Length: 326
Image (cartoon, rainbow, N blue to C red; front, side, top):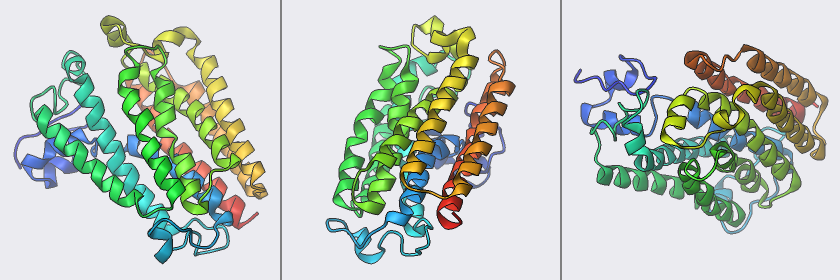
């Protein structure tokens, strides 16, 4: 089977260690294929927006190759387009991978000094910096190949998305709120998904995007509590450090702003009543997170952080049900 490269919170015996050729394993782990939660968190705003825009899909839009053979919304009835659904899924996977590589290149010296991250492929010497750059570019080209099939508005938004994606790994060096910059990057799909369907950028997408930033501030602050002592020692910023003992009430604010943005997006689309039942369920999930999280227990923080994947399914189901059944 070859050597086991245990990385961060990935257990030995993962499918990568069982099935992936030894030489490829560090690259899979560099792109965090072993830990898909980041892909889910990047993907959910894309799928939410895609689902929200489904009733507004028009005729094929000029300027892109994808709508020429698969016009968005071809299922009709408020269902999100399955081809766009799949393409955005692949795009989120490769672009999250590229972002992780960029983050690890920038943080390799810090990661080497932290127990949780020192076994990552770059600080552990399993991948050279030059090879990491080549791998990052390759992932980016896959993402570009997907993007250029969309309409002009979506392509432009996809290119602009590189700005917050590149800034985020640097943010903790100049601000206590790098989670805000992560929110700018990770929720860009709320704009892109809407544009891929409609060819425009409208208020529902903006409301969803702004609410999503607050969602990211919430879940990534929880995640940041795992590393707050190391972050203090190395002099880098984190909302977990800035908020400390006031994190719990601030989670109420962050998640409340997200729900407000979500409701504003749905209301402006005239979505049906099942959507609001789903939003109520999402609010209950957030209440569970806020009550359950223990900020001095790293394992607990990681578990609550990962539960936002389930939150994503709740919101997605709410939007689809609101469009199809409402």
